Length: 258
Ligand SMILES: NC(=O)c1ccc[n+]([C@@H]2O[C@H](COP(=O)([O-])OP(=O)(O)OC[C@H]3O[C@@H](n4cnc5c(N)ncnc54)[C@H](OP(=O)(O)O)[C@@H]3O)[C@@H](O)[C@H]2O)c1
Image: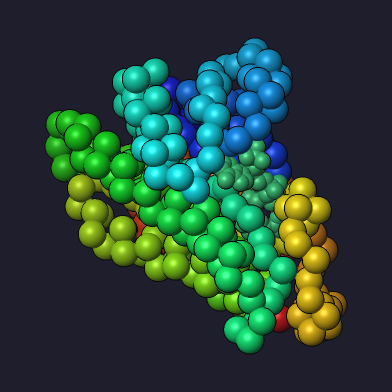
C-alpha cells in the first residue's frame, strides 16, 4: 500500500474530488480525517469506507474559519498522534465576473475559504510538522497538497476565483522555499474541468462573462471524473514523490496549451 499508516487531513471531504481522495487514501492504507460542513455526509462516508484497509474519522466544520482550520489539526494529532499530510481541497467558484462588475460580498466569501482558510491550515500544519522530531535531516516531516485550479494561470473563471487560487499557488512555492530543508514538501494540483457538484453550486454567470467563457470552453478538452485527481494526489503525498517539491501539477487534459 502506497500510504500505509500515513496520517492525512483533507478538507472538502464530503463531495467531488475530496470524497474521491478520501476513498483512494483509505484504500492505500492511510489514516484519514475528512473535514466539511455536512456531518451527515461525512458519517455516510465513514460507513462506506469502514472496511479499510485504512481508517476514516471526520471533523465537521467550516474551513473559512481560522478556529476550524486549527481545530481540525488538533483533532488529528489527538486522534492519531501526528500529522503526515494536509490536503487543502475545499473551495467554491464565483460567477465569472470581471474587474468591473464583481460582487464585494462574494470577494470576501471566496477569499475567506479558497485563500485565507488555506493559509490558516498551512500555518497550523507547518508548526505541527516542525514539532515532530526526526532522526536525521533527510527524514520527511510532512507534506502539504493544495488543490488550486487551471484558473490560477488561465482566465477561465471570474477574477475573484482565479486570483484566490493564484495566491495559493504563490504560497505553495513560498512554503517549499522556506521549509525544504526542514523535511516539509508543498505541492499543488491545478485541475482543469472535473465533473463534480461545484458547477451546480456556482452562482449564475453574468452575460458578458458567459459569452467570453463560452469561446474559451469551446476549445477545452472533455471533462474528466474525480479519479484523475485522486490518482495524482496519492502519488504526491506518498514517499514516491519525496523529491517532488514546489510543483503546480496541472491535471487538465491539455487545456493549458489552448
Ligand atoms: N470541479 C472542477 O472542475 C474544478 C476545477 C478546478 C479546481 N477545482 C477545485 O477543486 C476543489 C474541489 O472542488 P470540487 O469540484 O470537488 O467541489 P465540490 O464537489 O463542490 O465539493 C466541494 C467540497 O468542499 C466542501 N466545502 C465547501 N465549502 C466549505 C466550507 N466553507 N468549509 C468546509 N468545507 C467546505 C464541500 O462540503 P460541505 O458542503 O459539506 O461543506 C465539499 O465537500 C475546489 O477547491 C475547487 O475550487 C475544481
